[in-house]
Amino acid sequence: MPSHDQSRKLPAPSEVEKEARPYRLVYLVYRWREPRGDPTLPPVWRYRVEDAVTHEQHLFGEFSALVEFLRTQEMRA
Image (cartoon, rainbow, N blue to C red; front, side, top):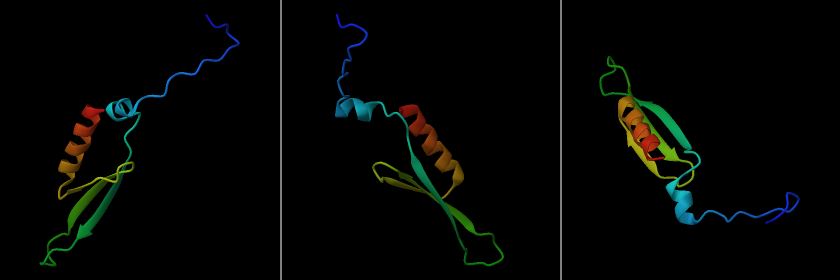
């Protein structure tokens, strides 16, 4: 048994463990507006979410869809 003054190295997590249990999820969220053909109508807001690690992107035409996506990602973590 090691004494308190001796250090022990813990094994590094495997790649599978890293992917299965991320410490945090980091996303870049972009929002922009697109004009409609009729200038009397308000613009349409569009959203894009990009995973900061994998750079995977998801596009949304409605804010509620963006929120639902983030909720499902939270449940997977």
